Length: 380
Image (cartoon, rainbow, N blue to C red; front, top):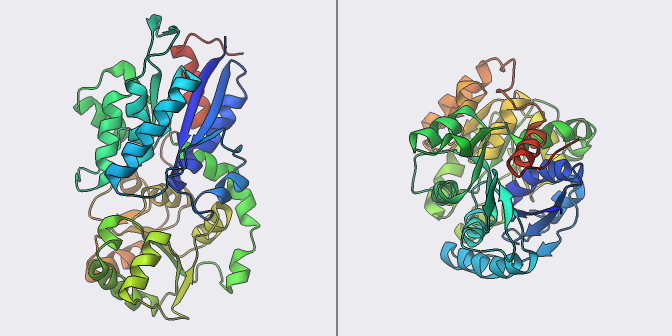
């Protein structure tokens, strides 16, 4: 009997993480893995382009959730995913990251009883096994919606696949049983390393008229940075002073663009190159050749660490401390003077000589091999 797995993705960072996992499942015939796209990100620039560039098969099931408040969006995910669970009868539900799709689908699976039992860890079981990929990360900032999603998903998941040592320490501190915690490494880095050669040949810098190491890159999308137009305007004004010396390439998230339009914020060339969101390959090229990256994204903190590109994080905390301890990352918050100081430090510091442990391009393979053992599946 095949092991039926539903892999859930809904937002841009999820697609980067799910791509290598789906590839690993495809090499194991005992697994029948299907992709569920919740539609939390539905803009082509945040969704479809990733399927094209990362060799992700078209979703088997699409929930078409769309945007909304956290409560409305999560409630709709619960409602629609429950119907999928009843129809598909999965043995495993695999969720990644920390978005509303992650907690919504995990919670729906936690309360469903399958028509037929199966074996998990040698025992009879009727509920789907919930797998959380990128478990244990903590910013210790409960004002971040993602922090709530992480903690709740970890509380109900059966298998917690961890990407960095802090995740293991956090879960142990919270009293999680050792058998649930598995350090496999970072699946997002699997995708980066697989795509790096393609990105080297991307013509995007020529198209933008840029030379390597002659510009900075900026990404902003966190609600705390962009939802209040006054906060966003103050942050961009501080960055504009930096742009006078180092032009800033700014692929603008749709959420951020709306707030800028509402505030009447205009960023003047040539200091600024304001773009629509880039595809994964193009953005990887732009990021890898940057002099410095400024961001409020967790994933970009990880990617710059492996690329050896200085990163300044426009937040007061990070759920990925390994990027600070072993990588290129510096926390700056949103104060203009602090940002300028951290950028100066980043530009003066040498790049790290190695990536963090198990960020080696094989995390998804380790994950699938371990999950097979938990389900009693023999792999060739």
